[in-house]
Each structure stands twice: as C-alpha cells, then as structure tokens.
Length: 106
Image 1 (tube, rainbow, N blue to C red):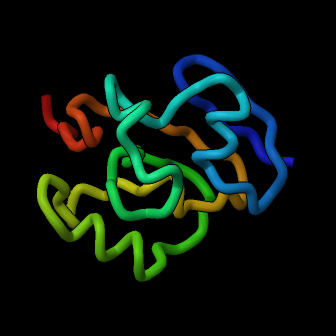
Image 2 (image 1 turned 90 degrees about the horizontal axis):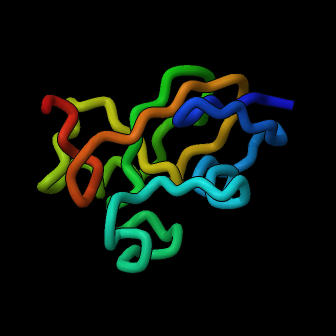
C-alpha cells in the first residue's frame, strides 16, 4: 500500500494505481473550477489534471511529455498529469492555480 497526501488528507492506495483515479475515488479532484467538467476524462490530452508530485511515481510517458510541452504548460515546471502518473510509493501532491493548474509561481 502507498499513501497519497493531498490537501491535508492521507489516502491509501494500491501500488501502481493511477493518481487521478486515487484522488477521484477519495472524493478529491485534480482539477480546478470548471475543469471538473471540462476535461478529457483521463486520456492525457487536455492537461487540466496537472499537479506537483513529490515521491515515488512512474516515469513520464510519451503522451504526458507531449501535452506538458504545449502551452499553457511549461515542460520545465516539473508538473505531472495525474491521469498518466502511477503511484509507486508514498507521495505528496499539490494542485496549483489556473484552469490547468499551471500557475506554479503565484
């Protein structure tokens, strides 16, 4: 079992679980505002589920690298798409502001 820490909560999950699903199953969301409704449902193409992750997770796949290389995202920000990220160990997750969660420096 792994622990996901998000917004003051500790959420248990199976190793290898998709981070987006872990958050949604726990009643949390990796989205801001209307992105809760206007998103790609985990297909890795919209970029609205971008979060900062500290801990053991899967490497970026091609779909994630592609989406995070396009505006409004910055590939140097270190953000991850929660829908493409698998939890490998304990992680700390933070969601930043902006529709896409891209406002790392506010």
